[in-house]
Image (tube, rainbow, N blue to C red; front, side, top):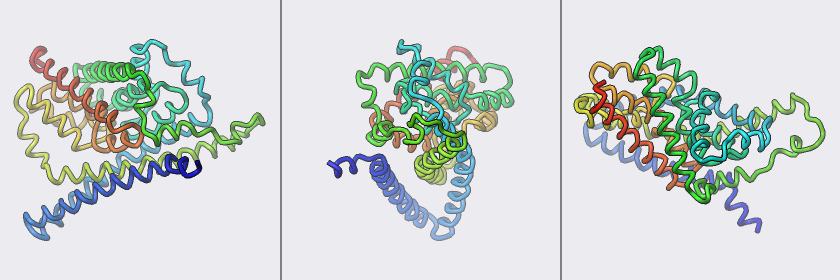
Length: 348
C-alpha cells in the first residue's frame, strides 16, 4: 500500500512529467544544433545560440516576477482562506459560474504565468474546476495592470473594448463547455488530484491560536514550494519558445500581414511563438497597427495571454493532456472566428 501511494504522490508525478518534457526538449535542442551546423557550420550555430540565450533570458526575466506574485497569492489563499470561503463566491449555475471565473481576473493582478499556481490553489480550496479554467484563461488579459497597459498603448477605443469583450466571452464559453463534464475532477492530472488531497499543516489546522508571524512563515514556505515546482515548467516553456523563435524568423511572419484571414492566423502564431507577458503585449501589438488588421491585432491580444508555449508547459503540470488540448483548441477556434468576423463585417 505504501508503495502505491508513493507512486502517485505529487512529487513523484511531478518528477516524471518534468523528466519526459525535459527529454523531449533535449532531443529538440540536439536536432536544432545539427540543423544549425548543416546550414552554416559553427558560426551559424554560435549566432543562433546567442539569439536563443537573449530570447530565453528576456522571456524568463519578464515572467518570473509574475510567477512569484502568483505563488505568493497561492500561499496566502492556502493559509488565510478556508474551503467554504472560496466555494460560496461561485454561483451554482454553470454559465454564471464561468462568467464569475472570467471576471475574477479583475481582482487578481496576475499574468499567464502567475495565474497557474493561483488557479491550482483555488481549486484545492473548493473552486470548481470549470470556473478555475475560466479564471485561468481570462485573468491574464482582464487584470487591472494589463487593462491599463492596453489603455496607454491604444487609448479608450475599439482595441481595448474588443480585448475585454472577446476575452470575457471566450473564457466564459470555454469554462461553460468544461462544466458539461459530469466528473470535473477527471480534467485534472494525478499530480493535482494528490495536491488537492493534501491537508493543511497541523499547526494551522489545530484549534490552538496561531501567531501572525507563524502564518506569514507558512505563506512564504508554501509560496517558495509553489514557485520552484511550477517554475521548472516555465524554464522548459521559455526554452522551447526561444528555440522556435530562432527557427521561425519573425520577419517572415510579419511579411504575411495582408488578408482578413491570413493576418489573423499569422498574429496568433506570432503570439504563441513570442510567449510575451500579457502586461506588455499591448505595446508589441501597437507596432503591428500600421500593417495588420484590427481583427488580427485583437487575436494577438486575446489568444496570446490565454495560450502560449510557456503557459502550455505549466498547464500540463495541472491538467490532463486531453484537457490541455481542449483548453488550446476551444479558445483558438473562438478567437479565429471572432477576429475574422470583425475583419469582414466591422471594417475596423
